[in-house]
Image (cartoon, rainbow, N blue to C red; front, side):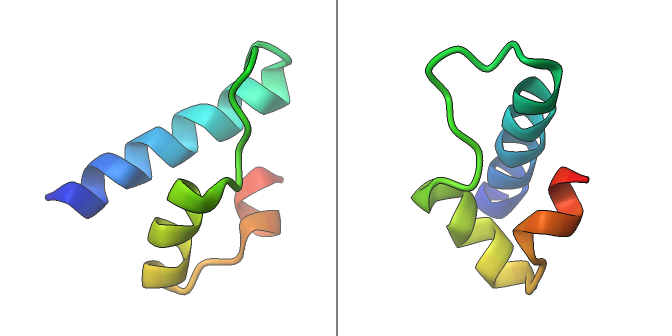
Length: 48
């Protein structure tokens, strides 16, 4: 369940960065890396 929460958090931050509304949040941070590494997903394709 915790990994699902990390997934939602990661995707929301990535969308905010792409929309220019992220403020002080940064995507691909260490917390995002936990979920991305667990799933084997690379960051760049998620951001595109």
